[in-house]
Length: 148
Image (tube, rainbow, N blue to C red):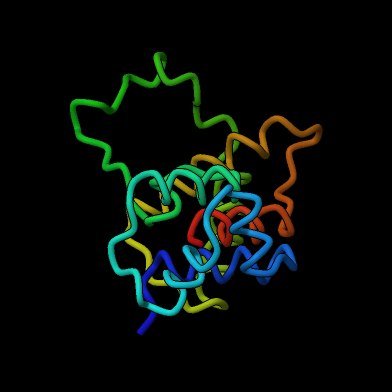
């Protein structure tokens, strides 16, 4: 069974068309460092290796490892502080339906909190458009990029 790290690297290689050797060069790693991660021979790569791969893949180490930053109740701001108000319930509903469709069609298993975070981002992005209309292609790209 592949780890999240292995899946994330494999998805990156598949989506960019890069070879594992090209990724290693781009990251400034020795030959076989990333390859050994994909083979499962390197189960605990160093922080330096993870940082180099994440930088080459233009993501964070947290993204690479699938670490979700939890929002604590004390971190939830008053609506006036967060800057995002419920301006258009119809757009919010459309965004949610589109996100749920992508989740269902790809078989993703997400928590309610993860889904709501996706919804907040898609809703904020959509409200910037004139007129505000949910872009299904953006939603699919964003969910897949976020989930890995």
